[in-house]
Length: 101
Image: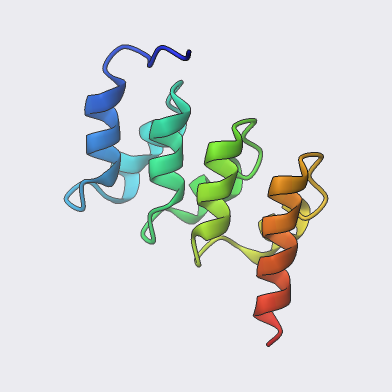
């Protein structure tokens, strides 16, 4: 069982709050709790630099959220298509295939 980092539930709430945006999301994008980073990665208004940075995250939850975000740069999606975990690489390959339909 993973015990959430201190204050993580409040930080998840901040990460999904539409009033929190832009540069306010950047500290949340490097939060130690992957649930917070995943919430940021899923946001359509996530700063581009954070999307690129989150593409290097070790958490499968974060990478899955990133691949579900339509604003994630194609360069990040292409790199994730070579991910060692087949769940992530499969999601990335599917997204790349859908982009050419």
